[in-house]
Image 1 (cartoon, helix red, strand yellow):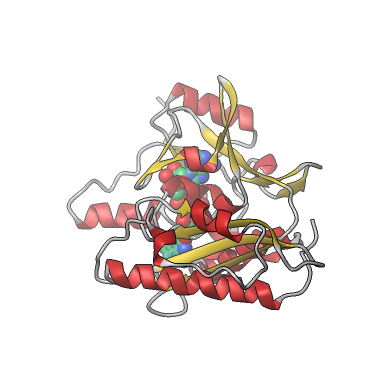
Image 2: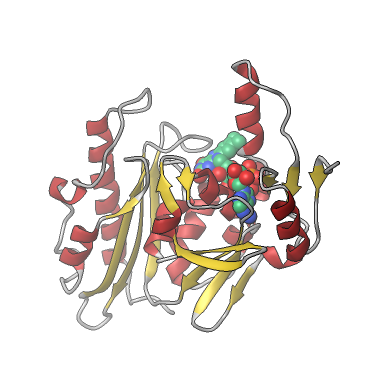
Length: 289
Ligand SMILES: Cc1cc2nc3c(=O)[nH]c(=O)nc-3n(C[C@H](O)[C@H](O)[C@H](O)COP(=O)(O)OP(=O)(O)OC[C@H]3O[C@@H](n4cnc5c(N)ncnc54)[C@H](O)[C@@H]3O)c2cc1C
């Protein structure tokens, strides 16, 4: 009989357990798994979590490593780990998001892979990782596969994770520039975002022109997305010259709900992007790689 709770200490043991029982539920910080369970019970669902695979005792899955051409953020790296890490300016947006996720208790337990697999439209790490061109590293007994984050996220709360697979790391190619993150909620902490924006901007220090621009918006559609039209308009222009317009937001599909109307979400996204660009213009230099 398969054990209800497994906490392997090697990746090999973890993928073997998943191969033997692909329906086994992967759990890291459980800050999404437990509230979802409570919600299920409240609506008459089962209280049983079923067999669990706790991935938090696998040492190689936690921490941030410099691999030369890219960075690797281990799947079970927590928000507190990310907020406290010494990282180049390209990660300023992700670190700002880490400091805003839930409160300190959630940041101590919640992990980066958990946030991606939940794939909530309001998942704060998602726009930050989209602008970093992050890739998701997946492992199973069949080996490893690597997917761009945009391909990993297949829709509202859905991903390309296959049965028997787990995320081992998030890979981020190194580049110059400075990251930023802004989120709007009904209050400062412990709130689901109404809209959020992440950016990675590299400015030529001499000409003050934009060398590279990546802008992504979250909570304004089923999946966060990059604003490629705006990015193209920004590239090569003096920083501060190009302003976001409603036409830049055509790929967004914001919902109307108790938190905000679709129109308000679009207006909020425009304001947040403008604020992010102003912040960039106010900063000197291009950031270090
Ligand atoms: C009070 C509260 C406030 C919150 N505030 C925010 C917020 O401000 N912003 C925000 O974005 N989120 C927020 N969250 C949601 C949550 O904390 C984050 O999404 C967190 O990063 C989830 O990580 P976890 O390790 O706890 O995931 P878990 O709950 O352990 O897992 C979540 C999902 O990921 C899967 N999973 C976990 N690790 C792996 C892996 N290595 N490979 C494959 N699948 C895996 C699990 O099977 C499950 O489907 C909040 C939650 C609470 C309870």
